[in-house]
Amino acid sequence: MTLREKLESTRDFVIGVELVSTRGTVAETRAAKSVSFANELALHDGIDWVSITDNAGGNPQLAPAALGELIRSAGREVVVHLSCKDFNRNGLESQAWHLASQGLHNLLALSGDYSGIGVHGGAKPVFDLDSIGLLTLIAEMNAGLDVTRPGAKKTTHLGSTEFYPGCVVTNFKRHENEVIPQLLKLEKKLQCGARWVINQIGYDARKMHELIVWLRTRGWTEVPLIGNVYVLNPSVVRLFRSGKIPGVFISDQLAALCAEQDATPDHGRAFFLELAAQQLAIYRGLGYRGGYLGGVHTIAEVDQILARERSYGADEWRKFARNLRYAHADEFYYYAEDPTSGLADPERLHPSYAASLVKPSASANVTYSYRFSKFVHGLMFQEGRGLWNLGQRLTGNARDPQQGPALLRWAEHTGKVAMFGCKDCGDCSLPDIAFLCPESSCAKNQRNGPCGGTREGRCEVEDFECIWSRAYDRLKSEGRADHLLEHAPVLQDQNLRGTSSWANTWHHRDHLAHRTTIPTAQTPIPVTDRAPRPPTLP
Image 1 (tube, one colour):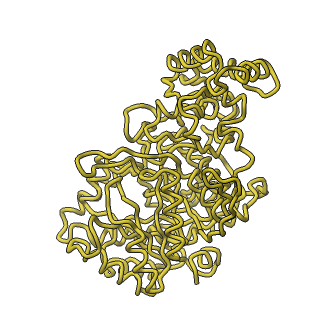
Image 2 (tube, rainbow, N blue to C red):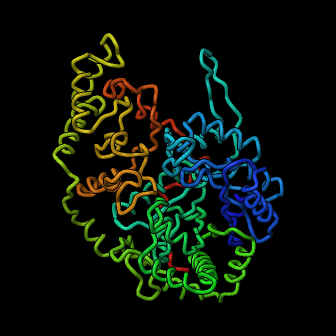
Image 3 (cartoon, rainbow, N blue to C red):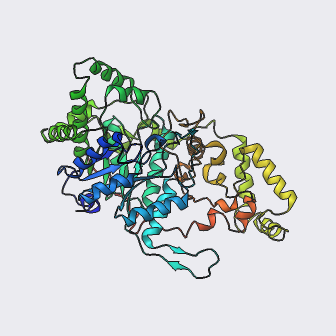
């Protein structure tokens, strides 16, 4: 069976294992261990697929397709991670054609970690697209791309690919303005073509339950959800605690427990494998479609985890779920706590969150600049109203229609630099992000929602508050938080850089002009088909 058939079937709890690539060719001595592990995984009957990382941590490594071909040829399903940090859209498309030609159809679409150290220092990240832009590209390739070569008049229709794309989400965040934007972005990923979901590393069963309840109550009842189980060890815990791995949190309580295990004769190996087995059991009990094992390096570890998980009684996962609560003391929860299970109560929002929806509080992020920007935007950029027709006429009659009249261009550039640190991209996303600039204020230029790497609401690269958290606060204070990602998907047109974004909006040259033409998934699940009542705990 293919991975698609396994995930869309309800018969079995499927198991995937993560394989981290290595630097150098497969002939390198240091690669021998990875290649050997890959071969063992390919021949293991208890494993449904092998997932291969793409330059994990932003550091250069052997391309996942090299190991993927070894595993696929042995008859095992492969998931290739494809991230946006190292390729522009042309490179991503090229990689996708290469993977399709090799028969590697299962993709995990990622924005990717910020680029790390390469030859002679740090690499320049790309982030031409983000995960939503990549999913949109994959959906177009699955539908069959219509392309026109430079200088040609005839359009060529390319054959359809058969990609089965997945995505990642993390709701293991501390603050409301981190968690809810992550959930809204997940929904947008599903609308843009993601067919299955893996959650990020986390050790809080209540948050695990919240994720599946949220998806079901939003109408995404058929989406396969895979639970991430990362096997800890003392050195990995220290690495996670250092903050060098974006988006992963280890609580003080869990860190102290791991430190105690480090003092045991086996340095906690048995404990950590048992914890991983318990996590798998929790995911199975909650109704996830499968588990995703990371941090394992031998078949013996995989076997021990799987055997231990199978040995548990049918309801033993409930006890494990009550104990797996390693979160911040002031962790934000979307749903109220069920007093019986200790998990999410699907029928009640968290009281403090529900109260804030009835009467949103003022936000420090609602500045005079924001209010002024909203007023000006409403005056100038509502088609057919206000100053729209005048602006369109002035720029259209200018000597250079892409720049408009010199005085108007000067006013645009000077005002936007002073207020937003404008980088003159020509394809402006200010109105999409509550008038915050993704080029000057986001290290990854994320235009379709936050990446998963924030720490305490702050950027993983620079020490400032994430613009998507700020945008959420602004919209929530106005009772419009659910509109945060209505604009997606945005695929920024780099050909417009250095031109007037005002003129490009008035003349339908920017991303707004393509809003209705970008396809969604081939067989989209209707997001408006809401479940009448949230499901009860399995």
